[in-house]
Image (cartoon, rainbow, N blue to C red; front, side):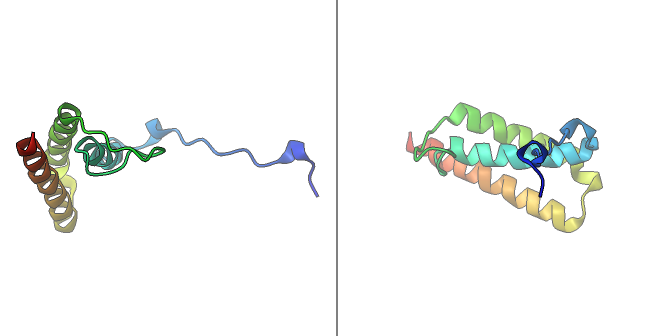
Length: 101
């Protein structure tokens, strides 16, 4: 049995080692989660609060659209359909939430 000094340390992953296109896919995923939160349609992690910030939501959605467009030539039809649908959902919900103001 190992002593406490030999406990496993959490592994740190250096995201800069990822390929540019893999990073874009990761950023799309993170920005999507942020956009839903900023639209006030998901609870902010670590809290039980809904916080609406349409300026940040719009920025996240615009960046997602741009990155999807850049990735388009490298995506399968299925991946492109999924990302296009996700972006359309975000845009429609942005418009819906904006109209309520």
